[in-house]
Length: 406
Image 1 (tube, rainbow, N blue to C red):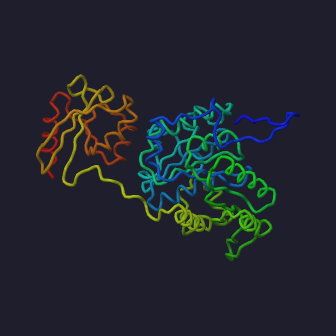
Image 2 (cartoon, rainbow, N blue to C red):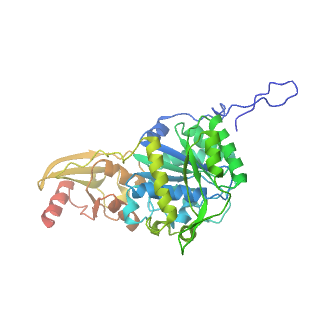
């Protein structure tokens, strides 16, 4: 926490400035962090003043809604003591942790990345007992060591309150904006005021409020049944000048799907909750000024295939994990037109899928590749074959082309 400045003779606190971290905690804006954050257009911190208001459900469903609309979305769970994101989505072991890649339904594979502390825990039931500096370091690692790549949105699920995690996010991601989740009951609204005060102290802009569990939609007649006194959030929005983005109903099927890890199975058409979330997402898109996904610059030239052949000491590698470089062989109209040697930017094999994708690779010869790694490449639309490490790179490519004519 930022250190208070005592100005009164009796030692009472005259106020403290949280807009900047103290020197001991200040985050150095190094090249690695900037490189990670610059390709991410919008960063949204989903927070709440108190627990039990459905903040994580809102964060996960907002990420799903945006991803279904075609936006490139990252979902980062920094609720380190109560991480629930992976369980809500039914995600198990990551296929590629460094790229935030899990087994997701087909339509979401390419444009939704997820990271949570649970992905690194052998025992997901174990308590996380960490102090503030460790939490800050983990959040920093989530940002810099996961290969997020270009994203339209990074949705950050923070724990309730105004403690270490949201403070670390505010200091590490200066352009993050807050989406504050509440319920209509007065005790929750009182805590929202604290969240708004926190955002003011750390100079974080607030996109708006989301009212959760505002009503129950009768499954028989479709009528709304109020669960709390009406218009509480609307009154708070009017008095604070913070817009109310929408009011989400209590939806039994969403609750059941989150408990069983099947949120991705709930369709918008069948869910009053997701129907309202669509409207909330549309309002957020309007407020951040992005109506459609950003056009991605194509890395693959039409009509050109690029083959990657792993090398070890300049020769084709007998086993894919042993390679220290790649021969990149470009093919146009069925003919080899160019070959070059490229060194990966990292020696970690977990980063190679993203790096090869950025190189425009369409085919990979990978003898000895494991099934999980093969699936990661296939999800990036990189075809994987064993190749023949006894042959030079160009000969391997020509043999493949002869056996697989266009």
